[in-house]
Image (cartoon, rainbow, N blue to C red; front, side, top):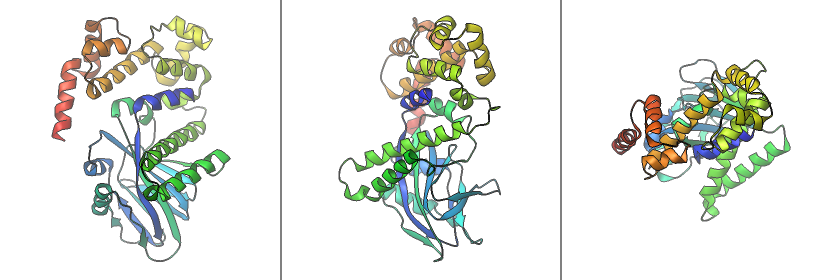
Length: 325
């Protein structure tokens, strides 16, 4: 999974917890979509993913547009990578509580609600969110369903991660400076663990980026490209590092990604460049060199083909849009 580690380094995830408490059966809560949640945050992020960790009891989660619920039990992590509005609950049907107004208060005041429900069987949850750059996260999110559920109590490492995360969240308010940063890093670790477990359970017939990560040849090639995107790679040098022929590597890439290794590298370089352009004051020429282009004109042409506008205009348009939000 080295490639997953390299991508997670690049996408600059940031995480936080917005709820730590318990519900008693029967209960049902409607959680708003990620765009609504993002509007409540002090600095409006471009993309928000929502996650829930069930620490005790059971329940279900279902997307608002889909009637089928996904059952949950203690030790489950459920991730909503596209940030869909969703319902969570347990027990007989009850009128859902719309958490939007309460969530706004929680996110702006930095406080967590404690107890909701009808007094029956308890379900304890820790709920959080992760923010990321949508361009850089596209390869991760594009192959994921609206709801991703994994169980982490079936291994000592998963149990340790859950225990550490729960302890850090429970003691965040009394742990002094740095506690929020610890919770943020553990939220990222939960996200990485969720992806690793999801990838490991993909059917052998599955294709796409996530399945390609698991393939020994494609996974190693992807890890090299993401670790050194500015390196002057050729199909020959990449195949040599992977330890296969050029034809085998090209065929494996086509099978999983419907792309060539060099085509994939070009698009990743441009996605990285887009992120650097909007997050730093580096010149276009500097950005071009950072992502592996030898000349600024060739970078400008490639960037315009990918994003529809030249790099300088992309930067100014993105900044104006962010300012308006």
